[in-house]
Length: 269
Image (tube, rainbow, N blue to C red; front, side, top):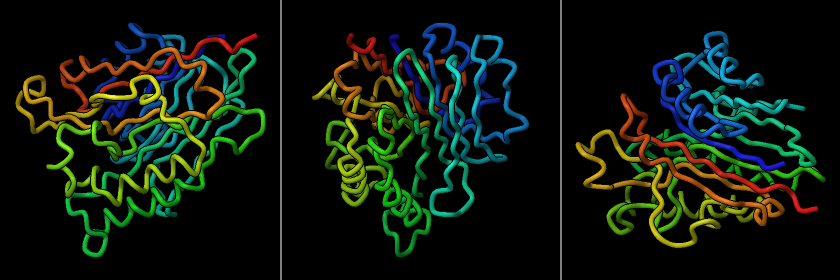
């Protein structure tokens, strides 16, 4: 069967629930991975998602900070919550599901932003981010025989020159410093992941985030690609499209991130 997945840093799921409902009604992905839900599990608005046909909900939340949620029309076989860096943050959620003749492990991730100062010696938030990315190197797309894999979410790093509005001006800005970009690309390569967004659009600008500080983001277009869709190599030939819903940045009371939707064709006979 064809399969689709969306990822979105929603920056408070309760505050922006109408935007999430709009996404699901208009685009109907099979799976939606949310980051920065800022919601403890017992206060997550499950009823709203079930009303739209998304009966399967996996949560890893905490009050006021971080939090990830995976919402699906397809049942889960397995749910895993990993505590990266052993600090108790709700930043990872892994689910395995069966879509037709395909079994897929989905990692939903929210990598730390890292603060403002790109020096781990004086900025513990940046040190935490680097440690998190180092631990990400252990996550392998081929870890489960016979199971495809997707890794999606807000990775808070724009690794390529065309992933930012100005490569030269952002080289010393957190999210595009060489130590971050090299670390993320190393994790991608060592983990046998395909960058699905760049497979679909190999060259040119791709942005998924525009700062709230930009008075008119459409004019300045000072964006960064902080949200990612990685997949195991076996899924790459079935990739049909990757769509960045940039118009969502202009919706009422928007997140500073926009949704990304990847669609895959049916597995070949």
